[in-house]
Image (cartoon, rainbow, N blue to C red; front, side, top):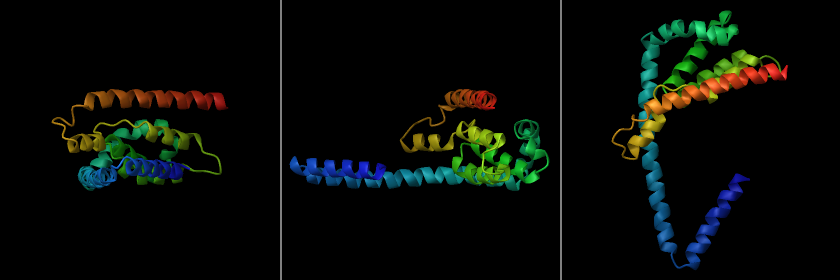
Length: 188
């Protein structure tokens, strides 16, 4: 359905551009927009590659293992299944670390691995629902994608939003965990 909606909007724009005699301006605007989109993708992709590399260095240097030991008490409280399954603990730590760095694209594979390890049967377990909630309302220390977009748009201080991001993501995370706990209690 959304495909038809977009196609309809494009066709309406083309018809109105031709009827108003401004077809050349519409064509030029479309080409300019395409060029700007490619430029934005390259600039944003570069920043994402940088932070993904930082995450890989953290993993290779053993910092991820240290982070896993630091986060272990919290992760065991949230995901008791990680006690018996070290692979689950590693996947959860990688997912949480990537989310803290604002790397949703790097967090996704670890989140999928953790979800597969948490999956049991046809219904989603409480822990699997909690993982989904944590990923949806993730706490971000460095929102790399947003900062990359701000830098690409010419912001002089792309990281000036950090305090607001920290507050908003912490509030979202706490509200999401409270809602998960409340709904789990009501659902039973």
